[in-house]
Image (tube, rainbow, N blue to C red; front, side, top):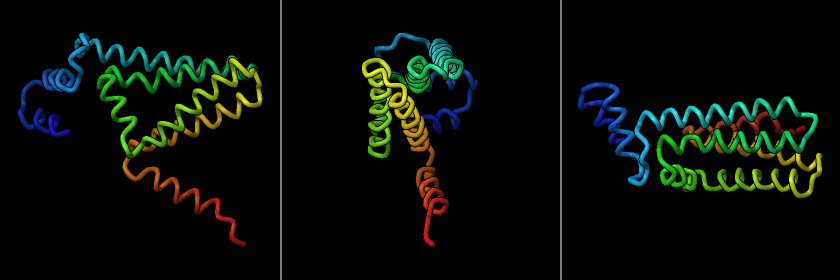
Length: 163
């Protein structure tokens, strides 16, 4: 964030600032240019969204649905690794603020794949996918300040059953 402020204050071309930011924030081992990273991010995200959309077409077959939806989810979430690098992505995922959300999300992804591929139970697969979607929403909310607290308070307020 500090580097981004420096680039904004330093002036110069907008594209040049973005490229310098992407260059300095990325890992030294990655040989992709900033433009290639943006294209890779877009392609990976679009592929994930297409797989998730296609999964709803085969909704009647829960095992195929689970495979397409889960791989689409993983592609969409992993697409940001092209922008910031895999090391920074993992560091942010396992930050103390979102480590539980990440672990639960990864657990339900694995559980959905196990239910679809190994157990081959349609009911368990659908339950695992529903839990995976909820875990993904909770994980995404961890990137928005105070979003999880607001959602928790709303759920308590709406689901309170005091008579």
